[in-house]
Image (cartoon, rainbow, N blue to C red; front, side):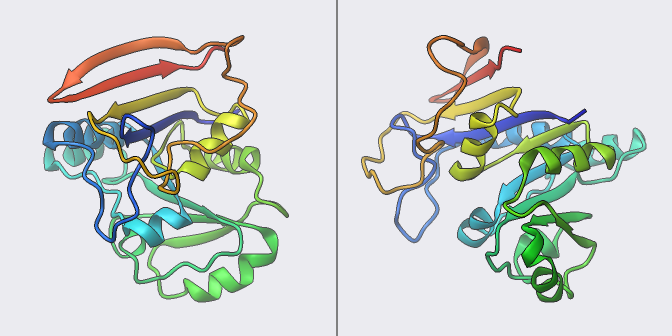
Length: 224
């Protein structure tokens, strides 16, 4: 058993999540941010990679008070569990990922557990969890399910999306596509090169498309 996994991203027409400038590239508009907020509110946990924490310093919170109140009314925590995955990379306990919201889980390679635990000792409500010698995503999902996570939202970055898709561990993809190009091959992409099982012989199912301002929202479901 594992959680239902939803990959969520906003990207340019040429598949980039960001550019290489110091400032964050704004791909979405207010309406699309609200869609993402609703998806967060419907999730039991939200996952990002360690590089996303270092690069974007996200809070990963449910912003609208009425959505948080509805979660509490349902007997759930005000905020979804925040989850990150790292090999041996260092994480900063002062990042907003750790200083905001509720419970946090850090999955890392077995050999890095002691160092990560010491580094994050000051981070409130944070648990460091061994995830195998090379970080086993199947093991991570099984552990999340044991903790009561039924729906996991994965917000990136590209290496995380690539692992979930290449290992056939994703159930849905939610993409907001912005009407412009980045045009820089070195900029972060939605996915990296991999042997994807979602290929021409195993196409995904188009479940939804709609306009959100000048963006296009697309939802695909992975065939099982």
